[in-house]
Image 1: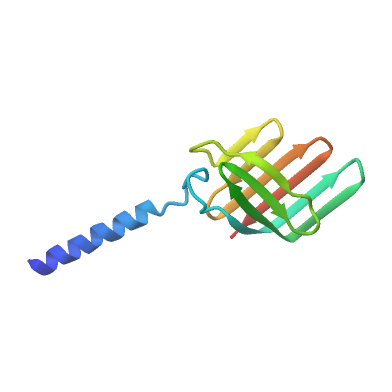
Image 2 (image 1 turned 180 degrees about the vertical axis):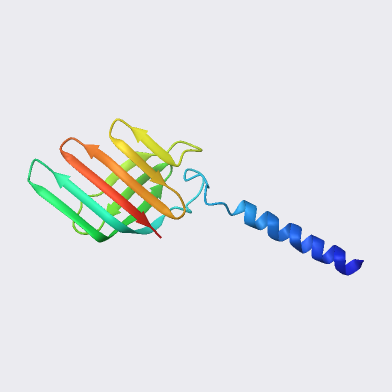
Length: 122
């Protein structure tokens, strides 16, 4: 009986741990999403005829408060100061979309004559 109680207790502990470690964590609550994502990145600036695209790029996510910066590889300019509201892991505004979670980062963002894109994972 005592062994059954130990096993039941361990199963409850493991189940609680697995449930609490969901990939749908809130990016405004913690720094879980800070780090480097790898995959395809692109950038276009029609003012100076810049067109950069690679399937072997990186985006490093940096968080200060509720503001995120996305630092790209391959001489692509950073996107700075995007604010993610509480309980929001998808930012959709007139400039585009940024979706971030523990394992995936998707960016389709436009500002003036610049266009950034990313489809990355870690």
